[in-house]
Image (cartoon, rainbow, N blue to C red; front, side):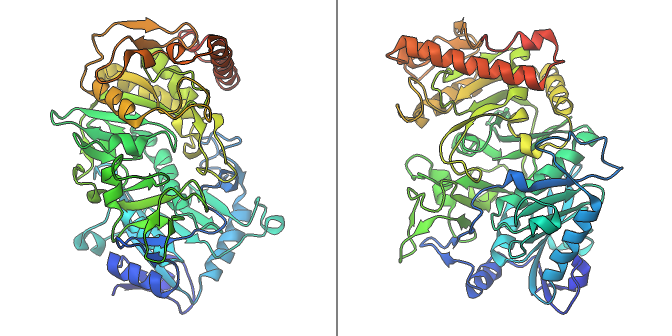
Length: 524
């Protein structure tokens, strides 16, 4: 058993601080403390309570002189005063006094040249298990001289009082970039911890000349890396877990002069509708050491992945080496293919289209998708959203910083860029089935293999993207949505409605964007 003085992690009193406990011990302690139960495969199953997804309205950044000019303040990056932060921090740390607390000291960044040291202090053993599996785990020797760059305190049992604390609810996720600290109060959803680490890395890495990305990545036998951008629910985890390629990571990466590296050491996969036949790698990763969030299990511990009673956003957190063909360590060379993933609930975007450089920049800063049920609190059906960089909630700097870096990377590497619609085609969501995963996999495989480099393309007159006329293992007729819609007038109306949403969003957010990029977008 490893111990720290609680004062070493900022908590006064006579409590006990357990440091970097093994998976078996964390699981045992979580069970003893009544935090969850075991599934029939040995995974720890927990319910996260009121918060079953991220709570973006409860996220804040401490506004201090040292960082004020760096942050793109607005509806996403919301300021909170240092005075309010210090008061909340004081109460949260007092709440943790005289308790058992769990500490994980780990790394973010598989490339040692660019990694950061994160100390996570948890009230719950189950959340400590989660972050143990999601970050990069140090060796015993690395722990001997470990010094954290950032500290995160996560206390779901501590509830803020909005009218006193100056926040919006009982939950608050507050990043203090100057003090290198993060507070997570009131939410039992473990994803808040993971995304707080990512938000920190999105501040740190660009200042070192590294593009940080909300994406998954994998690598082929020939060393050809591929990057998959997309919001939650668009298929990043599913499509990057390809038996024919090695997985670099499923969600967060940096792109350095040397190539791509995983920020994490684990995966956080959606479980709703999970079937072994469709996603065997993820299904088989749910075993001892995995944390299952809000999945319904029967008396025998058998999960019902089709049951969304608690939330559609059921999740599994597991170490990346649970994926048989994971690339360890999580590094790869310069990407040759970039995939932008979107789940179009209008059902009018092509299943796959090729983008030139200007088109790529347009869609990168647009970040269109339909936000799917359960990924955030209050989302119960698909909602049209434009999330800058395919991950706006996590990027504190001005979007132009990241977009400029991507543009430079595309020019340097000559990588091909494709827009892939994993949502609906032939009708709106609810009127037709979602795109078959087998077809999406075939399209992505063709793009990665270069099989779409020399086929004939046709320009979509509304969305202004290049649609291939043929793709291996995919029926030609589904490649152009016009062919799939039975009501052509309804298609035109829906397509023009979505195109106008693109144009309106772009005009509102990027009034100073160069004309060549503006002209590369849809035509309203």
